[in-house]
Length: 255
Ligand SMILES: [Zn+2]
View 1 (cartoon, rainbow, N blue to C red):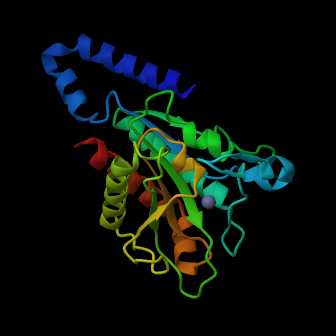
View 2 (view 1 turned 90 degrees about the vertical axis):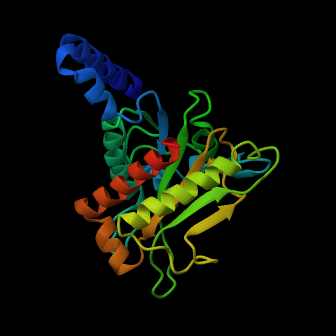
């Protein structure tokens, strides 16, 4: 579905370029589409309805040499704004930005619905493999009750042979690019994650372990913190996150 839409856009662009070559339209339009030919997977966190399907969500699935529950419910702000909805809206805004830059975008879920669940972490983990995507970003918000805990952090896989040995190095580069882009957009590194540098390396996440393409998971803010929640629940704030993540992809794929 998303491929079809992206394909139509690409076809229209080509027709437009051919129709007006004397104006240099092809070259100009090409310069504005730096991600042309690239494929990016966006994983918009937990499905909104996960809490309505405990049996399905708790079913063990492969996660990279061990089993884990299919998915979790995610967190929310103290005001009740769900992580699922935050991740969904940031992901759709990011999708639009990446498509304007020429990328083909594939999302791991097509709805944000109380009547749906999943996909499980093994499906999320493998989502970019068959389509040979260039990168995958999994979008989340955190839920720490620690006093004053706020800010973003970027999670990349450790070298977990054989699962992530092929991708842990480029995934670390993607994580560093993502951190730089988020900081450039005025966002602050988390003050409650060990190390304090905004990067976290984990071996226990199926979404990362099962990927054969460079991937990171971003916890864009702490939904239980009032100032982070203020940004995460505002359309302007979510556009800031989406703009930063689009820049992260450009930095990473622009090498
Ligand atoms: Zn989450």
